[in-house]
Image (cartoon, rainbow, N blue to C red):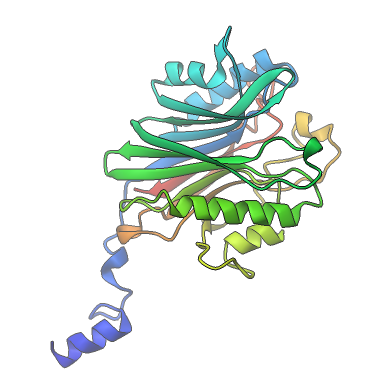
Length: 292
């Protein structure tokens, strides 16, 4: 090894003094990931589902994760119908019942889903007001390597920052058991917490983390514009709750892999405008393009 090579090795830079080749040349292709809490079967659900289907069809995501997705065997499911309409693969994981109808997570993918898994999350002592909380994972066999996708729905209790922190710690531990050598983990969902909350600051590395917890990048912070509120008083369904406008739905990604795989290049809200005079859900959707 020459003296110059030794210097380069120690400093972790290329000979032109730019960052290590781990990220160069950058990948130019992307995978489009959408996440959306579709509000179960509340309100005028049949009309809302038309707006949800239209929005997802227009977005053309490669991967979509849904929370509060309903299932009723006698009528089929919203995820099943979406998968059929869009020609996507789909797996479903229930986590609660409301209005006498089961609901859960759905992960839809343009490419085959080769493995799934789920895990229960901690719940507060006063769990009678809580739904079951869990995390759902799908390994997606994309054309340039396996993509590990996770989705969750954290505690809604306003004073529940500590339990949401515990839930995210459990999610992080679960993610570390389902990794891919090809792509960093993607974590999506309704976290019921805005970016200033301790639980979000924890998983993005801004406050103390449990040992071994992986720092993740907030795709909106990296590549979105404006406040990005997904729970908004401009939304007629959310307005009735008399809560603050805030950003509580996320697409988070682990540290980029070689070539910048996983790095967010564009993030935006979807489902904001009415379709046929109706907004699809009480949450807005988030769509992110990640290098892949």
